[in-house]
Amino acid sequence: MNNQLPPAHDWKLWIYTNYDCNLRCSYCVARSTPETPRRAIGLENVQRLVDEAVALGFSDLFLTGGEPTILDEIYAMIAYATPRIRTTLLTNAMLLHGKRMERLVECASPNLTIQVSLDGACAEDHDAYRGVGTWTKTVVGIEALLERGFHVRLSTTETPANTDHLTDICTFHERLGIPESDHFVRPMAQRGFAESGIEVNMLSLAPELTVDVDGIFWHPLSTDKDMQVSKCIFPLSSAVEQVKQNLDTIARTGKAPLMTFT
Ligand code: SF4
Image 1: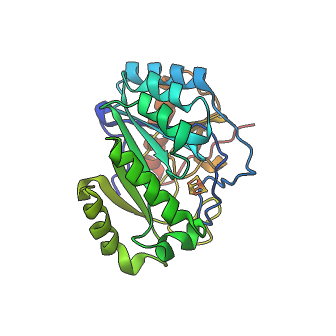
Image 2: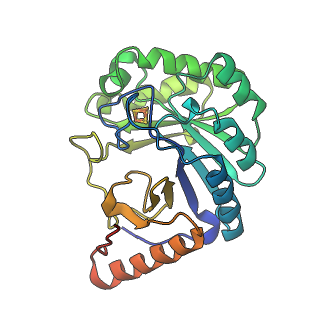
């Protein structure tokens, strides 16, 4: 693969806002469950990260978790980010009703995309890895988002349960009015809770800087130690330099650098 840092205007910054989730998907790369410690990054850190990312020329911000909509602060994070940078909120959409939906509507912006995980056109395909009853609630959430005029993108994780029915998802989302350009499919990654899937590491993934409360990582598919590039979140520019150094090492040696953080 062409493992290089893209031009500055294509840089993506991912922020793990928290690690707890209303679900416990059996392939979750973040090991999220309702009992997982929150490890929230906090509004102030998000604001500073947005400012630094904008100054460095990053094109996109992704707020992920865990389930970000669990957080009371998520709306303030979105409201701060969207006037400054194209922003995507990742969610399972199951909690987006009532007060949460009202507060999200107050944050509506042409710069905001809501990315929802949907693994099937029927409950059987989606619920296999995400839990019984989740498909129905997610579809209700997607419909509610569309009704309120949000730009919705769908993300599908390909699993043994849905691999033979991926085209059904396309028919389904087109019926909802979501175009194919707003749907992507990625393979299951063997990280976190996943017992199978593709191997992902610094050699196989182009870097997309990812921040959590413990530091900066190579890619959002894993915040395991071997993917960490910095223990310090700030300044973001130092992590960008570290990523460039790692890419040089990979180009010279064909191996990912061994980085140890105490
Ligand atoms: S995959 Fe997403 S929805 Fe499922 S447990 Fe992990 S963070 Fe939650």
